[in-house]
Image 1: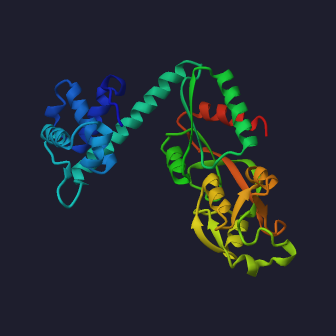
Image 2: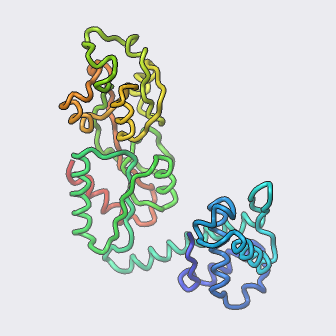
Length: 326
């Protein structure tokens, strides 16, 4: 949700955005009130939520109140911003232009914050780190050590570390909403930089209740394995992994390793798991590898950032901390 502060953005920046749209300047020839800012905030939230109903929860106000606010904003701007009715919510051409201007305004706000923060040599504000996959215990320890080094060097930083789907991570990096991510690099996106983090082997597994659990490897072959359903990761993986999956009967889908593990342990599916996560289950004979010499591929992870980030010093700090010990 956008929190617009004219004193932070600069009123001239806001006027420029509106002038580009051709909005009547009579609205801008007076001081912008808190109510005006509230209306703009409501408008952006409605657009990002895709309509009035979905915006009710986000804004904490009723649909009828949202409708009143939108009508007030349209009256102030002298233009219709959206169509709403039985056919659903959609922006008019003018509404899309106003929304684009608000996005530019938000970027100007972030750039202003960065420039002010850079006056002080001490790093402060947020450092947003993301990961796309469940971390095994060795990797969790590595991340913990890196976070400790970051806080030692920049104690005023507020670290945010979350797990998100790949596409959301890529979008967050491109929009400067995150500084660094740990994720697979099978798909390379223009505008993002990739630095190799680590590689770990992934093996085809079955659970203790699966029909193949007690079958010796010398009695198994590709044709036999292909008789049974195999969990698909649900995303693109490296070429070696793709070739192996093409030989099997992929059925269920599970990207995250913890959910995939549950499907394998059910005995209904085969599936690929990293060695570090599967090791304790192997020791307890709850899992076993199937033809491990053949059915394995490397699971590669990369540290990914925007090629030209808004806050490069934070990216550098995080990357150096993470690459310090492998």
